[in-house]
Length: 266
Length: 267
Image (cartoon, rainbow over all chains, first blue to last red; front, side):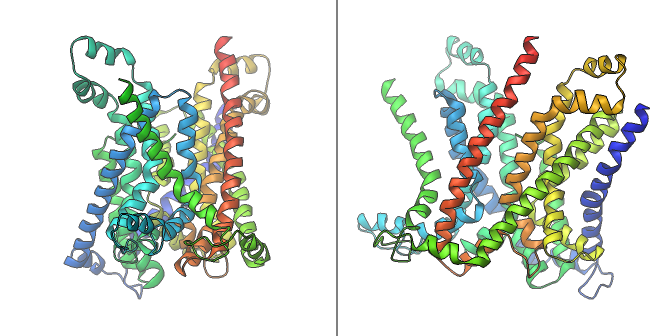
């Protein structure tokens, strides 16, 4: 009797897994071996290892690295200070709220803020330095990306800091460790899990961002994500797009293994 | 010591200001008569009038909500079934396999999900538009619901089910009278998360939306590429207020979430 009910639940769920997880992956691998006319080819893979794509991949990594590093740099102190406040859950909620505002609207806001006559340039001008071209630069791309990812980084770090047993910190201090040493030797290693999942949550999406590169970076930055979108929706070369997507998945898997395969989740 | 405290507060305030500044900047200029996102000339409601006269945009808003509600509802059902399926599987290997497959869509980059679903829909001959967007949203919402419901199932004491069976409950009774009431908070949280994911999604939708159909994110993207238009600001103000409303609802759900488990522990 129980056997029967178990099978019944599995049917729709396994069907979903096959249709939405397994089949799409197989299809994308299948398409990566096809040229525009649908013939079998290995050219896409050969193409990927030409300087053009390798340079793009490296560039994409470099941007994702910068974005992750800056996000971590801003988020860790914020998460740490948040755990020290009264009503910390309420403050945390307030940090999370901006992440629920539609991504596109936030990117759009920066079109205004960073615009030639926008708020930031107006601020700079009061200090007597002339208006800068802020939009469509590397700086604006990284700044906006960091802005968008901050809440996602703060959340896991906050949770691990919150779980940290205060008596370890007290013990370290009692044994004569300076605040700095306590942080380096005790607090940071113990919250490494939070940092890891934060880095995972930021790095992979940062590799594959594509709307920001178009809106904010003005097509100057090409990430792996932009390349996939370009191949699929503009050039219509699904084969090449699939190949890049396959590499994106491989990089993701590798990255997950390297950072200790922790699952994301709130 | 006191000075240090002040400094740290300053940092927090700075982060908050940076996080909220763009949002309030948008809202502020939605009242600008001048029509640009600089030089506030005069207060006006004009952009809201423009917004509500734009039937095309309103239909898109409506579509977005219909997609969000439908996909959240359907994926909640599917996700809850999935969580039950994983929970009923006793073999560890199978359980882990199912969980890993479940998490694939959560960790995959949006573009990869979008691209692979685009291939899939074309392969199956599903026309791009409402159906494809709905199916895509269901696809990526299901694993989230599973992850929200599964912890509730795991925390439920197996003796509850055993007791019900001993007292003569059949499978359906056990499900409807014991399991479902217990996991309801998880189901609500899952529904809510699916709703926000669907409302927020841009990348996946962008791939599978086709020509005739559009959701809010995609529409804002194409509007924003044409430059600044203040009716977008007006729209974002309304969406911000709506988000705040959702946050308040979520706050109460999570409060309800916390209470029954607390009682359980005391028993």
